[in-house]
Length: 107
Image (tube, rainbow, N blue to C red; front, side, top):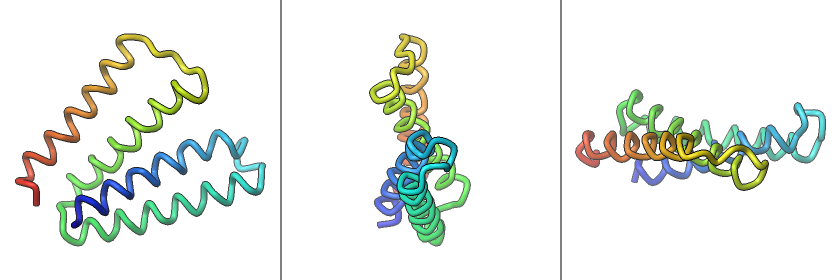
């Protein structure tokens, strides 16, 4: 169950990271509120996940999910570069996330 909570926490991390762009430096009230809410939910879920998972593993997976999702959405939403090298390294992060899950024995 902790892995599912961690994945959801990572998805909320993507939400607050993308929200930073829409909030225009936290100057737009509605996107700022959404960003802050996503940040709080993400942190609360991460805190819940580390009650059962090693903190190093959980934090690395959480940030990895956030990095992959934010970089991918940056390409799709904000016209950021989609070079082969960038996509390759996003893939490397995904391999790292899966590897950490497998190395933890699914704990």
